[in-house]
Image 1 (cartoon, helix red, strand yellow):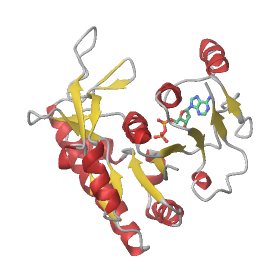
Image 2: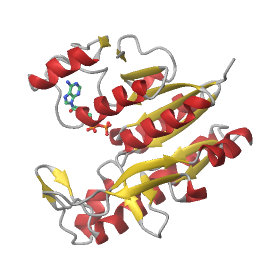
Image 3: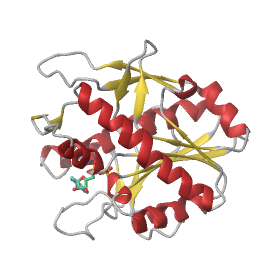
Length: 259
Ligand code: ADP
């Protein structure tokens, strides 16, 4: 029987202050078995960009990663956010190793082709190097990924953290029974954004399309759900969206996805 592995993606909101970070690190460190952490960015990158006089560029509500922004997100996501998280996990007895997709050639991506919009240095994942990831896992290390990838030709690429988590989970499906947990600042996928308790406990693709059509699923929830169904189609056994308590098994209500 294949061993289980859990890929946990934590939202940017948990990186905003030290007490949130401590709480989330404790939950992740207390998990049993093999696991991988993927983290988003949080507001810090925008704050530092502004402090440096780099004006955020948005087209249709989407951030454009120009060269200067890529430098900032690499420093913030790959530097402070990643190492701060790793340091905390180490203090809790979890032997974490901080990684980007460029390290050990773990995640290759291609720069998103320019159509109506040029998103800049943004990558779409092409491959995950399972053999190298296995070396780390077998050595008893716990990978902690920031959402940066590379194209193998010297170019780093800013990549959606939800996608990074889903692609890692899918790639490991051949070797492990994989679970994918998206932990964020709500209890799950909500039927009504104004009612924090309106959690949809079971969400299948047909219901998703219906809710999407009605505009109930919006903003950051869209990539999470597209990635979630993609992961299930790609062989991931279990995909859940909910609060950080998903990690400790006491989330109460949360969203479980099915095809
Ligand atoms: P994270 O960085 O935590 O992954 P995102 O901002 O990318 O978070 O996405 C989560 C956000 O999606 C929520 O905070 C919420 O504002 C928004 N959202 C939109 N539609 C929904 C919905 N139906 N249920 C829950 N959250 C939703």
